[in-house]
Length: 485
Ligand code: HEM
Ligand code: PLO
Image 1: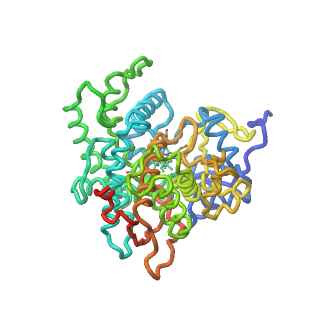
Image 2: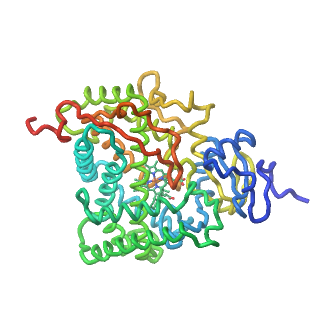
Image 3: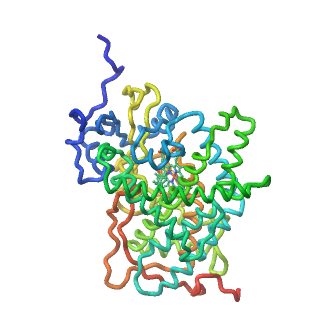
């Protein structure tokens, strides 16, 4: 009889009914590390059963590029997962919604509104720079005793997203800002413990503490966002949209000018879920990346000094950094890239699914197969990175000191499911880091050991809490540019 697959099947772990391959998977190791180890034994492409779901794990960048780019359309689906269904009202968002014409239209709408406030125009930069000033003042006033920078960083990043999504800017300690940060924390702690790989299908069966907390956090989120949505509906005018909520409400009405409109199709639920998601994605990823980079700078004071030297030469200490300086600050860019390489916030990408029969590396992959792209192993692949565990920003410069982007570096994914927030994220990372390092220096509190770099996997891979001492650089004692200049 005809073999079901054209080529040899993908090597894989054994399986049992119901549990799938779980008995062969170590539950004490985070998925990205477990998959990297299994890859050494089974090869860079292997299969396993996550519960009942046949799942292919991709550990090499060659195969990842096939899945994301070459055959990106074949693999642009998303699986149905218990917790993310709750989070998104059954996939009325961008990130966890399965591929469909409505999703495509919806994604384009969000993408267009991001470019609208974004790249090039000064508005986005103004929003970020305001938050940067606030953060600098807060960090410098925290004194010279060791403190955890995480709350201040998260607050600053939250403020940027609040402005972009619904035009709110909050002062330190504002009750609504606290509420937003609290519900987000509740979701982060419960949504996907152990990464987005939905390894625990029994969560649905045994309603538990975690699920209760998730539901409660979602309720608070929805209440707050519904209020914002109603306010925006009431004040919506003809002119340019002020924020993402405005842009979505307008898009909902035009049904996308010139395009085959899926009967608009964008419901209030979609608008709400998108705002919530831009929010969650905008805060978690950016603040975590900033905290990783700071942690590495504490390990490598020579890197911090070199960034500061570059800033002193190219920008000086008399004015704030702006986007137009980015071209002149290649080393800072390398530091940002190296941070995202060595500690990708999303060490395993959100699961993809095959929407039709397709192939990876010449192996047949059937429709419905889940595909996990293990960015961790790609970013630590010793075939492509010299001493992958070493923090070395210079690897992003060539012999002439020009920036290079290796093809095995994909922190934002690629293809139809690439991060929609990439340019916003890059702008934020650049403005936050350049401004912080222009105005202050970070060091370890006396006698402290450098931050633990192992990380803890929740919904994203986060550093464990650590403390810093902050000292202003000459002229920046207050956190802002000297008014005498
Ligand atoms: C998706 C990384 C910031 C919104 C993703 C994916 C990655 C990623 C790896 C998944 C790609 C895939 O599944 O193949 C990052 C990193 C960030 C960042 C490293 C910052 C350092 C942001 C920001 C926003 C955002 C600021 C929005 C405000 C999204 C959305 C998706 C996504 C909506 C889902 C796209 C889709 O499924 O079609 N991001 N992201 N991200 N990101 Fe980001
Ligand atoms: C973070 C907690 C929020 O309350 C909800 C949320 C929405 C979008 C998610 C984000 C969380 C985590 C990081 C994710 C993002 C979509 C894309 C991003 C998964 C769960 C990444 C890194 O892929």
